Amino acid sequence: MPSLDKFIVRGGNRLQGNITVSGAKNASLALMPATLLASGVSRLSNTPRLRDISTMSTLLETMGVRVKHPGTVLELDTREVKNFEAPYELVKKMRASFYVLGPLLGRFGEARVSYPGGCAWGPRPVDLHLKALEQLGATIEIEGGYVLARTKRLRGADITFDISSVGATGNTLMAAVLAKGTTVIRNAATEPEITQLAGFLSRMGARIDGIGSNCMTIEGVDELHAADDSNIPDRIEAGTFLAAAAATGGSITLENVSPQHLTAVLAKFRDAGCDVSHTENSISLNAPDALQAVNVSTAIYPGFPTDMQAQWMALMTKAPGTTTVTDTVYFDRFNHVPELQRLGARIEVTKNTAIIRGVERLNGATVMSTDLRASASLIIAGLMAESSTEILRVYHIDRGYEAIELKLRNLGADIQRVDSEDY
Ligand code: EPZ
Image (cartoon, rainbow, N blue to C red; front, side, top):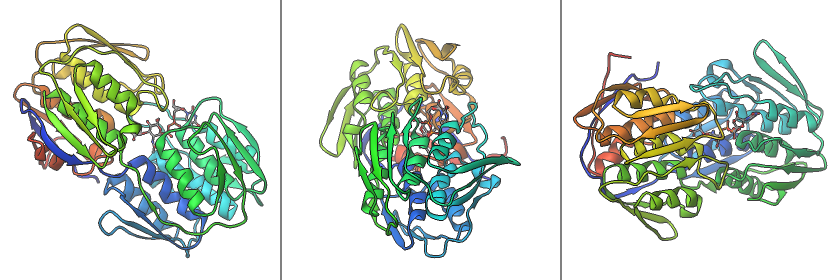
């Protein structure tokens, strides 16, 4: 059972100082299954120490991969892979487990992967993954909640996604690199995590053109070899800390970050009145005492990321006037709203748009984490609120943020992790 710790956050401190951003969770969760495509030992540096990473490590170990995680270097030995199944117990914990489907089909021609359920905020289908793999020649059956996939050998295909999907692009890419012939993936996701995955596959010997664009052409090869890689910084962790600084009138500098992955987010902080500057691998933000109301509509990369939607909403709860936050990627990703309302925020949700009316102050209360980014929004709101806020079920936040309370304390936040009986 995950720890039922809670955070106690006392608002009012301005965040100041420097922190180092960890490696990108959503890149690591793609790079790790990609190692299944070759037999050998891969070392993935700048891998964050997160619950989701250990869940993926456990899944790969059930397949026969030997995993070591000294420091931030993740070492994966895939010379003894013999089990091609991703069990329900692990897939239900983390949807990204579904990423093993493509590489297992590509290298071994068979896979039995539990059908991912919904997540905290609603259904998250995998139809685009399955349709693309069928176009590559896989036979797909759904049986007892599992996806049974098999093929003699995948064949290249010309695939156009109806909508841009990070996971479907990743799975298809990992399946296509060992297929016979040429695959074209159109309307591919261009998130930096997919670009990182395509780069890693190239280092393993895959032949991919159009990396970083929404149209990639893959010439299948017969075999790949293990390779090492260094992971990109986590752009969402970076955006979350910038939001915490902006929420408290603070002044921080993030080290080991890629500003070019955050252009849409940095523009919104500037619109809200923050002074934002950056070097090649750092970002500095000086916040005003009071933020301007700035509307946001999420979009696929390089637009404003849906994974920053909840954090931005928290930020806008005290901005004078009215702010609208629309999520065009997940229409129902608003579980953080009732919890923010418990802190005194005035928010109404109509369809996939939240209307926030700025209030003078937020008041501390006990609130419940429901999912990873919703938890981050509650911490930000707690930093803005009078008195103290208790945030329950912080195992959600441990999935995607490495030692967040230590990093925030280093910036001057008053935040403690305590054991909790309530849940
Ligand atoms: C990835 O999820 C991320 N997770 C998510 O981050 C992120 O929110 C999401 O991309 C969007 O950027 C990982 O990378 C592990 P999608 P993914 O497929 O791949 C629909 C976090 O907080 N869709 O790009 O599952 C889907 O319902 C997590 O770190 C289909 O309809 O997202 C959604 O509306 C949360 N059919 C849209 O596409 C499919 O087969 C985008 O989803 C697949 C997706």
